[in-house]
Image (cartoon, one colour):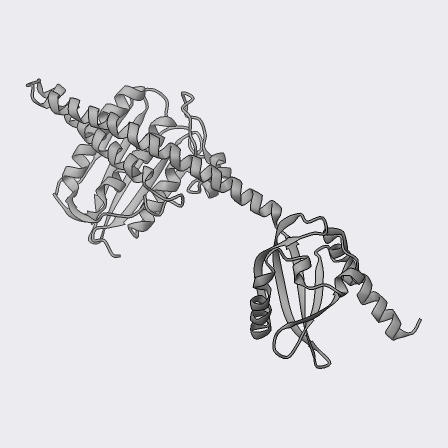
Length: 362
């Protein structure tokens, strides 16, 4: 066999072994369809037509919307390379969505278009299923939003009624604590019920100056109750005595510290000691939560701040974990232009640190 014949047969074999249907057709100088030229074996199998049938056809044979074809051809000729979606039909009249990658070429002065066609019915089906799931999720969230708003409103009303009575100081402190927890939980819930899937809306910061001493005092009261009711934890707090004004989203910073404290309690045994500290320097505030619990295994160090369910571990009393708390905490700290990190020894405990600027820099 001569070399030209060998090359021709090789190209033909490759052309016919390509899995996607290929259609080659000629256009005239005015960017109008002229005639069909060639199809590969995949086209024959997918559409049910033989080459001799295609050679005498136009696009009305395979395109479910033939009126759009002239504009598509002109667009391909002008831009040289176009990817688009349309609907095709086979010889039996069955329609199916396709993605078409068309390339304008000139062979010895004859303008042609080579179209590689991909059946995207499966892709469209999956997209439709995902859309239906999203719609179901949205409806569920709307129902949850309605019912939970009513529940939170009832709790707020009950707390207001309690404030009208005179209680001893310890009970009044509990009522104040419940009110703060209610407000934070209500704000958090409403943020997420109205947020997009990528956490973008829920992670928007509301930056205001606030007093650090007052902020820490409120947290101390809450964590003392939490640590005692959960596992009778011995909580020690070490805070600066000087009142300092800092800038940030204090509600989201509470969320960060709540996650750190919750983890410390979760991975500690009953009666263990925890230390909640805050230090201030010229430019930063650093918070830390130190436990003497089970520590973090080395194989989890790299994924601890990722949204990885595998990084979630049950607590010492079997408490569940979804592996999202520290992922969300890091997102909030990053938005504050801060840093979050940990030091740990397996079997001896872990300390988590959060450092943020005293003055927020957008």
